[in-house]
Every structure is written in structure tokens, then in C-alpha cells.
Length: 283
Image 1 (cartoon, rainbow, N blue to C red):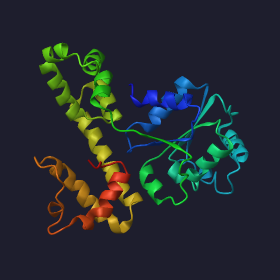
Image 2: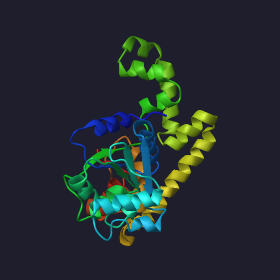
Image 3: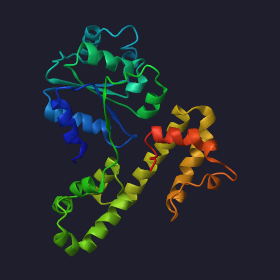
Image 4: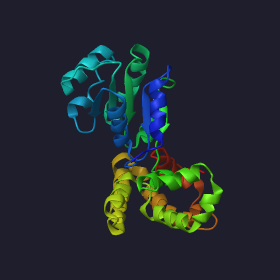
């Protein structure tokens, strides 16, 4: 499947002012797949490091920020020589590495020729807590679930997507009913890549719904794993209230419907955590 952010990654690679890139986005929106796909197509070598799955890697940056030592350690870890001009370094789940985000600053200052993309689950939360974050030393991109245009491309409706992008209203109007059906399908399948890929292969909407259920369950499990213990009950309350609040004609968030007598300040930290995690958006 194609993601619109791919072209932005190409532009990042070509930029003379390129910095280490932080790819943000909620869990399961396709960050890891996109980084690997970009590396496979645009570089001679991809060095993928997952800091969540290796206890040894978690301490990669703890002793110092000597870039040569770090690169040599990575080379030994993957048993490959890294070419600074032709290799893409992917630091996945970087929030699990002690001082991992801080290390990006030193790559920019001491070895900007390396191509580095860092990503992680709930990275927005980690960024807010990191007092030594390298301000001005990294580039950012935000990844979301698949848009309607990306969805059309994935299900084989690329010609329809082109007409919409070109605003060809004569064609668009003549296929109004078909577009409504496609939009309804998108509303049901959603934009999570795993759900879209499963639908494309099997056209099984019941299985798609089960995939969505598991994704949502994973989000809820993250509340207990990553959020401050004192905030978890309020985060769950806001999370469970979101669907009902969005279904109203008046989309303004009513705190009293989350808990009787509640005010904005009672749930300020919970909403902040959900937005930092990429699970809710302020509009």
C-alpha cells in the first residue's frame, strides 16, 4: 500500500539541511512499515534497531554520546558495516533507550551525514517528559491513520482517487452514488493499515472489526503501562466518553457528561495525555 507521507520522506532525504527525523504517530498507524519500506526502496542498506526487544540496545547511549563508539557498537550488533551515505538507520521504540532522544542531538552536531529516523509508541508522551530534548536539532513528521485518498488507492480505486484530487467535478458528480458507498466502506474499515490490508485480501468485515477491537484494546493497555497511575482512571473515563461526545450534533466536549459535576480542570491532564499519545486531536 502507498502512504502519502512517503514523498515527504524523500524530500527529507534530499534536503541539504537534513536533521535526524522523529516520526510521530499513534500505535499501529504504520510507522515501522513506512520506515522499512522507505529504507528498502531509497537506500542500499537498512539498519533496523528495535530498542524494546533488546536489553543490550537499551543501554547503547548511557555511557557517552561518542558517535564513533555508538556506530561501532551498532555495526557489531547487526554484523554489518554502516555506510554513512548509503545506509538508513532506523531507531524504533526509541523511548525505551535511556538517553535515546538526547543522542539525536549529537548525531546532528557531530555526524549530520548519517540518515536517521526515530519512532516509537507513545513517543509524544515521552517527548513531553524529556527535559533534555534536543530542541532545534531534529526534524519532525506526524503520521496518521490512512486517509480516504490512501484508502481508495489501497482498495484498487486509484482512478477515482485521481479524479477527486484533480477536482474533476463532472466525473465526480456522475459517480456520486459510488463515492458515497466507498466513503461508507471507509468509515467502517477505517484507516488502520492492518485492517485495510485484511479487507483488501479477504473482504471480511467481521475480521476487520476484530482487528479494530484488538487495536483499541492495545491502546487501553497502554494507559496502565505508560500513564501516571493517578491519571489512569480519568484517562479511561475520557477515552470511553469520546465516541458518545463525537456522535452529538454539538461536538463541544461536555465534561459533565464524563462525570457529573466535572469541570475542564478535572480532566485537563487526562486529555493532555491522550493528545500527546496521538489518540485524540484538539480541533
